[in-house]
Each structure stands twice: as C-alpha cells, then as structure tokens.
Amino acid sequence: MENYTIVIFIMAVMIGLSAIADRIKLPQPVLLIIAGVAVGFLPNLTPIELNPEIVFLIFLPPLLFDAAFNISFEEFKTNINTISTLAITLVFLTASGIAVVAHYLIPGMTWPLSFVLGAILSATDAVAAMSITKGLGLSHKTNTILEGESLVNDASALVAYRFAVAGVTGTAFVFWKASLQFGILMFGGFVVGALTGKLLALIIKRIHHNSMATISFMLLMPFVTYLVAEELHVSGVIAVVILGLGISRFSRAVFPDKLKQESKSIWDIIIFLLNGLIFILIGLQLPLVMHDISSDQLWPYVGYGFIITVVALVIRMVRMYLQKINLDDAFKKGKGRVSENALLDFKNSLIISWSGMRGIVSLAIAIGLPVTLSDGSPFPQRNAIIFISVVVVLFTLIGQGLTLPWVVKRLK
Image (cartoon, rainbow, N blue to C red; front, side, top):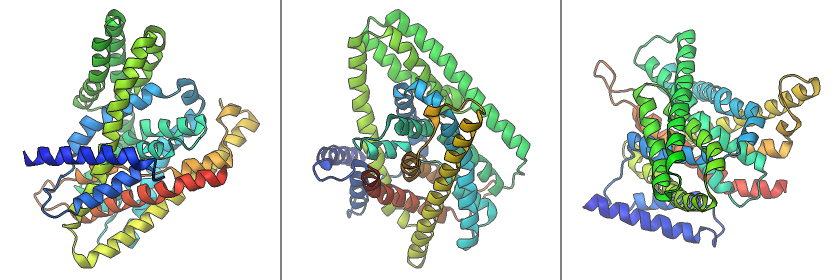
C-alpha cells in the first residue's frame, strides 16, 4: 500500500509540474528531473528502484511504436544515410571514445569495464530531445533525423553492451562473430516486426469499423512484438520499429478520420504519462545510487561524469561535421543515392549534435548490470559505473536541455 501511495504521489507531481512547465519557461523534462531529485531526497521516503525489465517491457514498446508510427516514412528514407550513421556508426564510436577516456581517467577501470561504461552511455535518448525541442520551431528534417536515430540506436547500444559485459566475464571477443550476431539480431528483429505488422494489418482490416477493438489491438501489439522478438533472441527494439512503420503506412489507407482522431487522443495521453514518469524516475535515481558511493569518491566521480559528457558531445559534433562533408561530397560527385534534400547545413548539424542527450535506456542498462560474475565474485566497479552513468545522464539532460532552446534561438 505504501508503494502504491508513492506512485500516486509521483504521478500527481508529474502532472502538476507538466501543467506549469510552459508558464515558467522551463523545458518539461528538465523540471521533472529536478523534481525527481528533490523528491528522492525527502526523508522517510521508500526508495523506488528502477527495474530494467520494467523499463524495457513497459516503456520502450509504446514509445518506439508511437515514434515510428508518426514519423514521415519518405523523410526517413531521404535521410537514411545520416540516421544510420548516428544510430549505428556513432554509437560504436562513442562507446570506444568513452572507454578510452574512462580507462585512463578513472582508477580501477580496466579495458573491459571501460567498454561497459562506454556501451551504457553510447546511445542518445531522442525522447528527451524531442520533448525539449517541442515548440522550438525545428525543421521537419531535423525532427525526423532525431526521431529516426532513436528508433535504431537503442538496438546498437544493447548489442555493444552485451559484448562488453561478456568481456568482463571472460568471454573471448571475436570481431567476425560479433558482427554476425549483430546482423542476426537486426535482421531477426526486422522479420519479427514485419510478420507481426502483417498480422495486425490483417486483423485491423477486418475490424476497423470497431474503433475500440482496433485501438486496443494497436496498444497491445507493440508489447507482443517486443516479447516475441526477445524470446527468439533477436532485437525487440527493431521489431517494434518495423511494426510501427508498417502500420503507419497501412493505416493511412484504411483508417477513417474518426478512428484516426480517437487513436491519436488515446496515444497522446499514454505517451504523455510515460514520458513524464520517465523523467521523474531519472531524477529519483540520483539519491538512490549515492548511498553506494563513499563520500571521498563522490565529487571525483561527478568530475569524471562531466568530462565524459563533454567527450561524448565532442565526438558527436565531429561525426556530424564529417557527415555533412561526406554528404556534400557524395552529392557533388553523384555517388550513391544522396539527394539534395538529404544535405545538412551548419545549423541542422549543430542542433542535432547538441540534442545528443542520454536518458532512461542508459539508466536501465546501467542498473541492470550483473551483481556477480559467473564464479560468484562481485561485478567489479559496479557501483562506480552506475553512479557515473546517472551523473552523465543528468548532465546531458539538464545541461544540454537548458541550453538547447538558447542554441536554437541563437541560430534563428
């Protein structure tokens, strides 16, 4: 009953703060995170630990499905080069860059542990970016690239994380095997998503006159798709994304206007509540993980988190600048299928770079670290990795979140 009361209290705080965020000119995610931190420090409050399985099963499927369902498929195809660069190449570059910094900066961080930390913080959270940039008047192209990145990068980060943890436990890393497994995970997720999309389309085609049944099936299928994919040991993230993209194209031809409006209203409420809870939960984790860090290590770890935040941002900015040059060069020479609409200007590149914030997936992966190794010994540096991950997430969300509107305004 006590936990139930706390959840209701947090929900009430979240809804109330969301209502006043616009009035005080503060991005909603930033305000909710600060509130979460404050609530977490309240005396006699029962700690609310973040359960990674709950995050991946309850939060990811509907958020990914909604983003994929509402994204412009044509715009997605036009910018697929940039999206794949951010969601795949940049993820592994960031993981490697953070690993190098962590290994030489943080005492006791072996190479395997450094790559674990790098993998945890390699993927950005476009849920936060889109929440903060909402209403700033960004171009449709910029929004599509940020959303498209978020639809794929979680899968890349989870693969990198699995291999990094395997390295800590002593499993040998073989590049070609890792590449093959990555391909199987991606392709398997694509197949599962395509098949469940066909099944859902078949069901909707027969019952679309019943709006409640149709919307209910659409709410249920992302969870089913994610579970089926994970049971088959392929990417549940990719499966849900493919499901959303497929149903989006199908719904345009089948859904009557009334059903579209009803569906949008229900999904808007669900996504609003999930997004709000995510940012509150992120804030709540700081007081919780601080208990596992000694007082003499606290500020040095905060400093390490700040340096890693800067390094990740610099890597993203450099990669975006190189991507801009590569697209310009390919377009001028007529290489590939780069169209003029896919080219990036300086403003788009900078805004996309500055929108690279970490979020709930990074926290869930960190907190989901094994407690012990296969031989029963404690997982080395586990508390340090979790604490630094939380610090980096907070630095990116609050620091970049507060300055992103200013950056957009300065770029006009």
